[in-house]
Image (cartoon, rainbow, N blue to C red; front, side):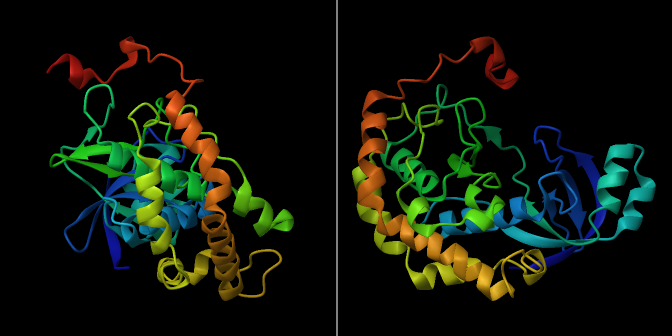
Length: 277
């Protein structure tokens, strides 16, 4: 993963609970930066790297990730005290997501989503237990006529309590997709399972996990090294994909029902750009 140095804080992006910010960097790129000092801490960044990089390894469209060195002195030029505090609390390495200029939030009621794509996204989210791709917050962008997956920081929920880590229990845990953003898009889960399961290998996971900086895995209670933490993530994901035949049937049934628990979208809350089209 490339490393860049932040040169200017542009603006906060208040859509996210962790207050990511748009920043310019020394490579002349612009990135949505997620900070280690945010309330969700470094584990959200670890989940972002693993979830996004695994999606990319499976052939799903994602924006480039980089690590971003942030100098806390950048806070001196910010009028917003909350932004100042966040920059000062996040010295050193943070996570950047390539900014996609002109991208639109993907509203599945406005853009048709192919069953193949819907199935692959739903399968991935079930694999990593991504709890943050609902119809309320799809975390999908539409850019250059393609949908892009973003924001996987809420995935891998097991890593918030390593003390109770149990790979066998994680392997078969049902995934609640009742309010998933793509549950009504006729996701082709069988095709996704056939195509993606063989790709989630030890080698593929090791490549993904190697992207996580050691500094975000250091001093994890119960582990003696970043290597041991990576081994636990690998164990969990391999167990999960190995048990796909146990969690897939319920997911398939939910998809066939079209998300029985989904509440109708309030059209008054749809993106304003739809009303201008």
